[in-house]
Length: 453
Image (cartoon, rainbow, N blue to C red; front, side):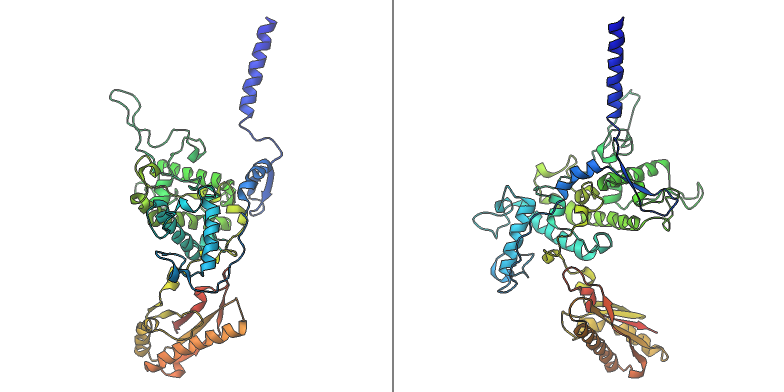
């Protein structure tokens, strides 16, 4: 009898230990970061942070290389990216990228050892596309990455393939004829993608590949076109579970949980997260999914699709990748030219935005053409005026920058004068300043804006 009691107590103790194993033992740190009284506290486990610290340590940086000498693009064959670097700068970058992505495999992970110009290995073609993607992120997605930006190390952390990628989930299993259970509706499986919950286990396809909108509150009453449903809410919550786990945060990092749908009561991180979803969707569709024809079969998913990125690819459990440490100051070659600044401008009947070359106050023919609609509008409205604002960089010599901005504004004024717009109808505004990026020179500072008044 006593033996049975002891055995029962031992089993109860073992069961209790198993239950408690799923709980976090104290101490747990709570940090208030929302409005007072809203209970917007962020919960951190110091032991988890300590385990993550080694994976979020910046790698050793290579010494800077001289920009002097011939450009690499004039020396090496088939150099489609980074050809604007000097030979020394390119060599430094290649050493760096090897340590970030293939420290064990070395240069031949991507290159043919006998002829580096060949595209014989798929890894080289993929690496080239990923360099283009990285430069695009740093140039055009500052609404998400701000000035911190990303490098190859952000995702790879010393691994040839990033640890956190995803593939489209296979179609839901159908039950055999005569069985009770049918389609599992893409859920009710203990998947890590959604925190081992019963939520839909592929929240990525609707939001990070397709154009799904993470909204679960309808703006009309049923049944007048309101398509919001409990099922749609489950997809959204599945995506939110992934974001929370990927960043190592709880819901209050972005939301005021007293009113999830209220943007005015949310933290700035909510807007940044929204841009992150848009960014991931664009990158998956424009850069990663098309690699399906380049990658070998063993690198494709169960449905034959290419690997794609999600929040965990960069964040890897940290609220900011590498806890916000930036590598771009040491690697400005990974900062591309913004897509909008790669053109010569844009224009409408109400205004124009014109871009200039670096250090130049010469208005190109292409940029001047964007003034056509505005000029026609000015001629049709004799009482209207054109306000011209030249922009200058916050980096470098302020006096020289302002003078350059003025000269560019004068060039636009002269173009308007040549088209028959009198000087009395042109207002030259004070030059405006654009915050410098880590590379020192921001293409947005090379612009002149003209507005109809």
